[in-house]
Length: 188
Image 1 (cartoon, helix red, strand yellow):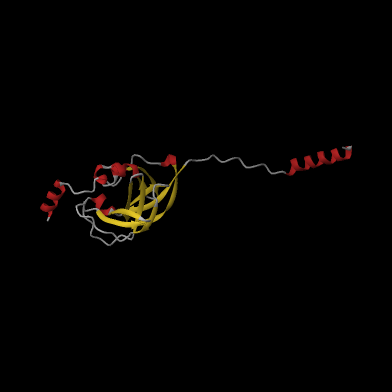
Image 2 (cartoon, rainbow, N blue to C red):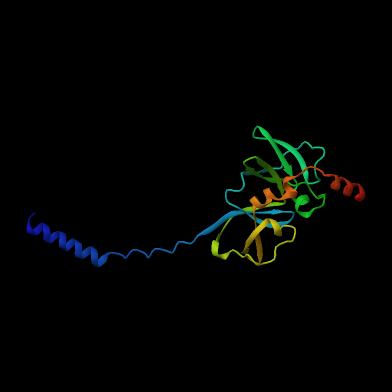
């Protein structure tokens, strides 16, 4: 290499060092909680990303005799049967007589698939994980099946814990027991 070539390279290096822009400081990566904002029985909730298989139009169902009042029936879904439950009736613990719910979320767990009606579907949201509020009050009908929540504006959106819902003894036993049928007879 000739001296003029080396001088040209050094000169180029000095010009680059003088005019180069410093790279930006790397931003601190924040862990984000991601999920879907929806409503069940008029209560705004969050369901974690990956927990919902699909949100579909509430399908036509065939009633199942001998089940609790919150079991709407079974529907054909993707080549199999899908039990469909009324979110309003299950969480409020009373039969639902309002307008038909247009949408339901489909939850698929090994050995436990179901659809639950929704009163509204909103959007996907993300929150910094450290902002989860584990102390604020949550609607009493949902409190045992939630795991804290996140503030969005002036409202707390509780995180519905699908695992807690699936293992809930009331939810996992949809058949009418003798005490349920006795109670229903006295209610009429």
